Length: 407
Image 1: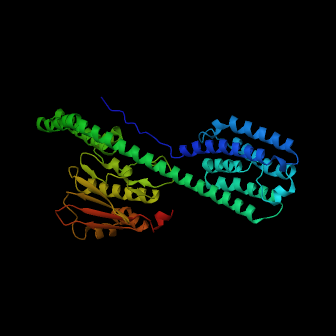
Image 2 (image 1 turned 180 degrees about the vertical axis):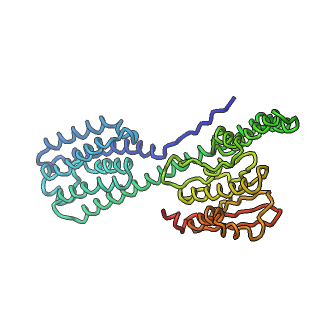
Image 3 (image 1 turned 90 degrees about the vertical axis):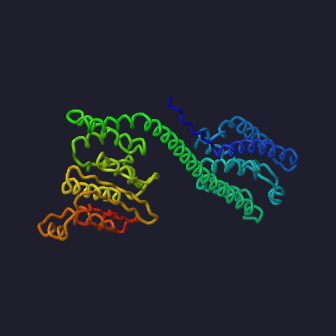
């Protein structure tokens, strides 16, 4: 019975929302307490009392809105900021001039920072900057002149909110990276477990059918050959999960080299393609693919051209080395380049044969292989001692400098 792989996700920003909830309640009580202690400095206390009633009702009624990012909508943020700005603008109308000249707090006081911090936690540093700017303008309007303490407070709120917004963005990116790593680790462990189970059962049965079919001959030999194709396809699937069984076995059963690959193995995205996904369909009973366990990313044009060059090399093996020749594909992921080696056990190429073929107008190696790699800024080296098979080494830089990489 298969085990269920479950990756527990954690939210690094959730503590920030809880802290913001407590901050809003405490600063609301602080603003009301300041009003009570400085009541004699208010010329129109009725307006201030009406504002604080609205502030308290709004703060307590919207506590569920600051529980998480989904509940904290843009409309809520806009209304919340509007209430803070209204309190700042109303301050000169309800207090005496001495309160303003002495740098006394505005009606919402430090409750305003909670509104700006909600923007920062919700949308990052850009949203924080967007919310801090009207708050700064309202504070300067309330004071009537850019006093030192007002400018100091404005800059402090602006810088702090932007810094918190940036930290939130970094935390979210780290959380996504960690979650992806955990998913890959869990999937890899499950794939290894399945591979062990399949190797102990299905793959061994298919290998036994292939051997027995070859010994018995006749229709049993054909059945053994098909079992061998299915074994290769299944082994490829459980090792990397890069291609379907039906695709490989159908093309291989027809006795042809698989040279048609999926156009968009990664869903058609503009990001790098995993070269392994493009080379996986080439694997068959006569073509062995050895690849790294991690993805081999390349720009889409470079990945497709390199895969096409590998297909051209395998076509040459099938055409010139005979139907019974075996081939091996080795993929090496170096820091600055990707190296793909295609080797076969055929009779090799006689000296001068490539130059003769090019003179006769057959440009398979010159154009389909070397031409593609040259356009990518890479190289193709062909080594073929007579009677010892042929080895084609394809090198492509990870940052393509050729024409194909610039398309």
